[in-house]
Length: 257
Image 1 (cartoon, helix red, strand yellow):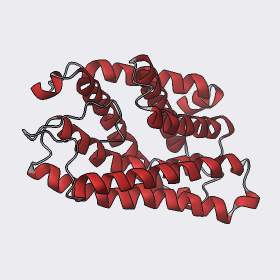
Image 2 (image 1 turned 90 degrees about the vertical axis):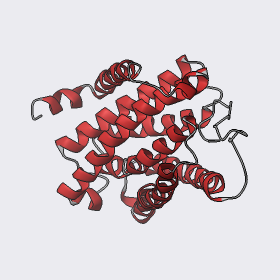
Image 3 (image 1 turned 90 degrees about the horizontal axis):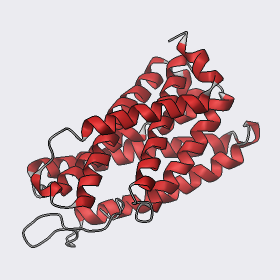
Image 4 (image 1 turned 30 degrees about the vertical axis):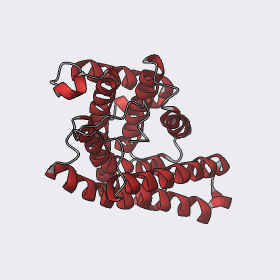
């Protein structure tokens, strides 16, 4: 790793592009995995399933990786501006590559219009992460931001179970409860921590206006989706479920699910 990091730091943009190609390889491998028959019956659902499968790989990898960086190096939580380790820098390179891959897949597959909220999210993440990679500042902040990937594990499992028509299963019930817990703890909690850090250290940080705007936009998006999540999983309103109990939402948008 000691030999790899200087190479990544010298060409951060190309490094992120290289990792995006690796995630494309993962995407190709995922297509060989078995898919529930009910998912195969709908082209949009099949695309969602494969996209979620790749995203699940990213979430497991980077979620655990981010927690490891914070637990192994407590300075990560204290100095979000200047501190970073070779391991945390590599993490941001890898994750940037994933978001570049996913944004490209959404656009090239023709789902850009229906998934504009995801594209907006990806643009904010990619621009913030690339700034961190090029300047070697806010790398620790990006690591904290990736705590959300712990929640993404249960969030993706929730959507995959819905696509498979298993939203009435015991697994779905327990997952939706754990999902709310991880959403509040790792997604909203991490976002709150980042927001407080920027506001408390605003006058001492470099180019923090951009990051404050990005964080505030993410705050709004997360709260809107949190409301949608609570309404979908914990209200008595029937949505996205057909008379036979299967998931029948034909929208191309994830965030309505």
